[in-house]
View: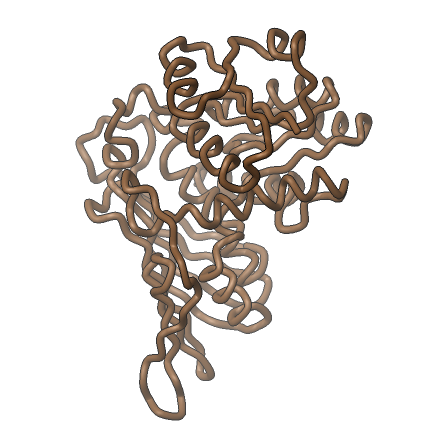
Length: 325
């Protein structure tokens, strides 16, 4: 199988590395407009690199592709690849540009349009979803990290999170809301308090305090920010029958045992793979599992199960509602 990776920045390189681990028999081809990135990908991973989709397809029969460019470019690239009868995996889009076209072309060409939602592949998150689903609970969740620390190797203005349309708080919400809705039900009402606390000169609020009401009857207080100097995910879920704590790292789930009145550690991973450039709450395991699921969808010709474009349209509508409040 030949696989195309479009965009050879940090996420593109991560996908290349993990594709090679998931299935070493796959031949990977790279695309990027920057010569330095193409040379780096060749030196690191031994892959051939091109400057355009047309240049690749004139010499190669590609079965599927990973779109790892900045989100605002995703829609056009996804449509072009689908029209060439190529199955497409894309990183989170953050905007719904050309979603109707993507769904239409995918159906017309009988090709898979697979949308990343990596946290749905985390075993610790899966445990939380399983325990909370179907119950009426309260929860308190803080998720945030100081924006300059996201990619310290590049300037914020060179990173898509500097654009208000694809800003850092919006990306956090797009990452978190799919699993939050899977655990607590669809968001039915939102109360918003937002503002700016940093001197980063951002063109958008750098912090949100949200009260989310869900279809299950659950209610959550969610703090989202690009302010917290220590990268933070901290969750507490409770009702009279359960109390769960999670600090965002893979084996940090704890459950309060009602019988013995003690916290019990829940082991979700026997082996954790991490990239030292990122914080401890970002692990490679889920990215690899998501890639394996996409490749299985392609080989077995079945649609994506955990997430899809229809669900993402709902999530993005809720984020738009929050930003406009």
